[in-house]
Each structure stands twice: as structure tokens, then as C-alpha cells.
Length: 153
Image (cartoon, rainbow, N blue to C red; front, side, top):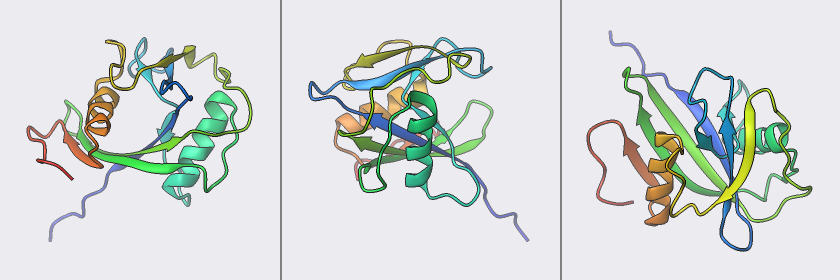
């Protein structure tokens, strides 16, 4: 009997301003991708939906309040790390929220910045940069780290 596949589920909230820029956070002191940029994100917790997880992460990390209907699904990526671990990342977009984004986790985040998602800074987490590139192409699904990319979705 084979083992069932299990994966870490990551949730991402892209907060987009009227000028098209999205909010990125510079990771610090986490042990993973420190010095690199990513949107408010984290792991899905037991018992929550991917939307609830993305909304929670945005509130925890940058202090904005989103309603359950605010996030729009953008993309899902099936990522494999260099060590061979599979991850599934769900990317959501919101163009409206309550509150001004602030760094609520200064122990894990060095700074916040707004960036063009079509040309993210070179120090963007590679997994995130790959997803942003696929989002820019209008694709709702991609593979990353598997040695192939689907034609389109």
C-alpha cells in the first residue's frame, strides 16, 4: 500500500494599490529566506479555509482587516523545494481593506515596501517570484521546482 501524499499549504495575500503595486515584506530572523521579499503569507492552520488563512495572515502581519468576500483567487502553485518537499501555495488578491498596512511583526520582518508585481525586486523569494511571473501571464496554475511548467491554465 502506498502512502497518501501530504503537503504543506501556504496562503498568500496580495494587497494591490490603485497604482498596481503590491505589498511585500522583507523577511528577517525566521531561518527561511531572511533578507528576501514576499507578500503577507504563512501556513494554513488546522481547520481553516485557504481564504480564512490568507485573511488571518494579512491581519497578523500587516494589520489590515479583510472581509471573507474581499480576497479574489489568483493562482495556485505546486512547488517543490530543493530538498524535494512539496508545497501548495494559494495566492489571493485584494484591492480594498480596512486600515493602513504596518509592520506588526518587527521580529520577523525588517520592512514593508510596495513593488510592481510584474517586475519584483531581485531579492524576492524565488517561489514567490515564480508565482508572480505566472500571475502576470494570466495563468491560474503553475508548477515550480518540478522541472516542467504546464503550457497554460
